[in-house]
Length: 76
Image 1 (tube, rainbow, N blue to C red):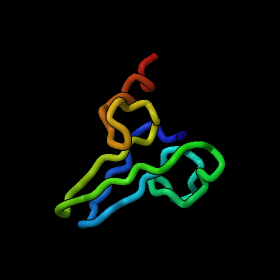
Image 2 (cartoon, rainbow, N blue to C red):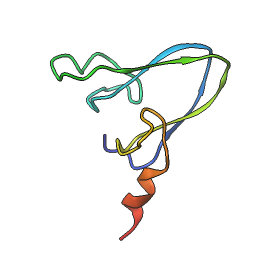
Image 3 (cartoon, helix red, strand yellow):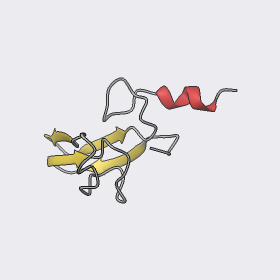
Image 4 (cartoon, helix red, strand yellow):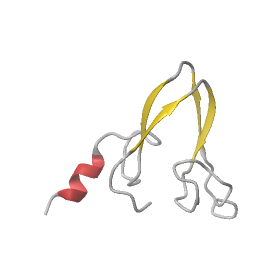
C-alpha cells in the first residue's frame, strides 16, 4: 500500500471487506485482486454506523485498522 495516512470512512452496518494485499483498485476495499497472492481480505462486521480509520500504509499492528504507525513514515 502506498498511502501514508489512513482512509477515514463513514461505514454503515454490515460486513465490509478491506484489502490485505495492496493490489486493489478500490482501496481500501477488496476488489478481488488478491487472487493468487495467498492473501485474503479482512472481513469486518460493522455493528452500528460509525467512522473508521483503515490503515493505508500496511504497517499497523491492528490491521485493517490504523494504529498510527504511519507517523513513523513522516519522520526523517
